[in-house]
Image 1 (cartoon, rainbow, N blue to C red):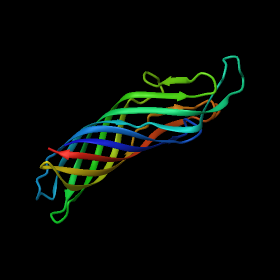
Image 2: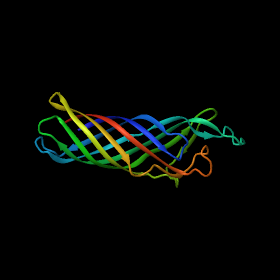
Image 3: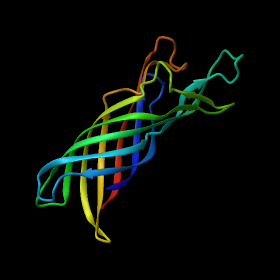
Image 4: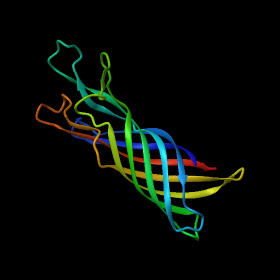
Length: 198
């Protein structure tokens, strides 16, 4: 089942002064190993997920290198992953709905923070940084419903929730936070998938 994703991403932690939120996207290919009348089965997929978010006054920067006072600026966080997701699928024989319980593991493909105007944007590419964790592991749950058929193929709508066990950034502080405020940064994501079962 190929599917497309729209996600809501909430990024939070002590690495930056403000939590960030935003809408991302994704796509994947799911494999359902559960027969129609089988109550419990296996379900897994390979996916790409964009988990971007932004915040006003979410970071600080110096307008010039010679400046001694920072200013609060809007910030954009771009994080994306290639993921493998595995689930136990629970379904009822009397309804078109099903539940998914499982986990996902992913490797980072994008890790970028952009502190915007005034002045020139400041780019922080976290890949290769000692603060950055390129591996992601989430506990996942979902609810799916079979909506109908298009040209003989089943149209499926899913809502999934993921809570990260791992953090994206560890032991970092934005200059807004002060030298004593060290912390992590993580992304909680909620997504809606629309797929066509082939």
